[in-house]
Image 1 (cartoon, one colour):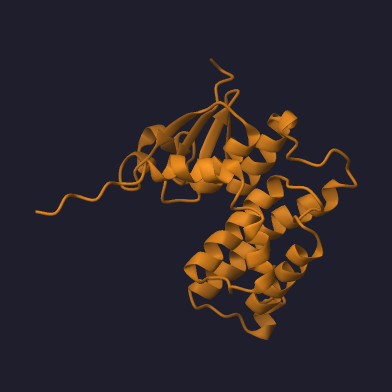
Image 2 (cartoon, rainbow, N blue to C red):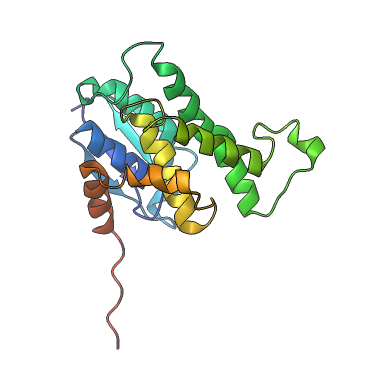
Length: 210
């Protein structure tokens, strides 16, 4: 079954982004849940992703890792879901903000969380410049249209939306009104709810009190 889609994940990981996207795409897939301290670092999974990170998918015998790439791939692999703009002109903002979130935003948030603040001189050579500049740019982007690439939901919203949902929840991004309004348009989606329910069901169960 070379065309089978297998999804490798852990419910406490970025795998939730890929799960949401799989549900939006309407894909049929098998879930393989990996543990951080054992199977994720085992030889079997390292042969799929040498980074020893999740998520990853295998589809038609090919491996796709990195959440932004998984979102873009699934949008193309399941075109009937309408998760990628049809024309090149329409894809401009789609590609721009999908990879802005995967590049500058990810770097800015990670460095800021680690309390590394680049000097103005360092910022010239960093893809994101500064954390504040990156956050301000994202705010303008989500304020321009109902969705990140225009008037309709796309795979880019899965990735950008996930970054904002997690960032505002865990305090790595500020709870600006524009961010919360944008998030509000996403979290009621059936696929988002369904994906969270599936991942929540995989969460470790607390041991009963003695």
